[in-house]
Length: 162
Ligand code: ROI
Image (cartoon, rainbow, N blue to C red; front, side, top):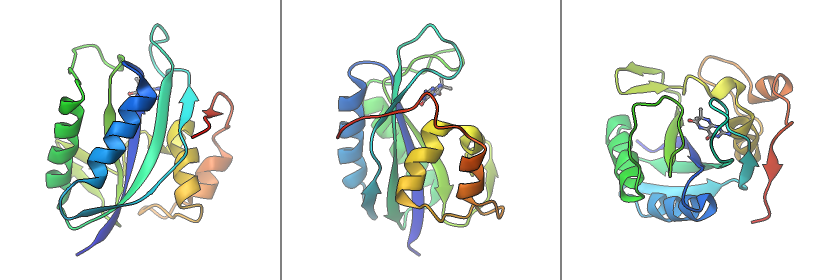
């Protein structure tokens, strides 16, 4: 079954814009998967520890027949190919972060994967790019993206010219 998946991309090390562009090319090359759309790129100050560079974020829409954990494995492979080193520090800087935000209508609560992504509801750097791709989106719990956006100021986001 083909399902629509939204992926959050983020980077704040080693030329973040280039990291995101390389990641989009890698997403487009995944098996059983079509890269359906990509948002603009947005710069923002780090959420969490402030002593790290600004982030660049975007959201991609995929259509895939991969199962969620197979997709997660593939995303973690892309992160590792692009030099991601997992550190003990929580919320530290990273070359590439690929998060499964939404996976069709699924609600997943597994050790490796919680969908919808726990923190997406209040993060401007996720919600605004997602809204470019799916302004009328309804989350599996019934919440409307437009309602989440109304609670989440655009403040601090900077839309970059592609
Ligand atoms: N802050 C911003 N602005 N963008 C991110 O992608 C991001 N990712 C994270 C933490 C460290 C929480 N902060 C972030 O994982």
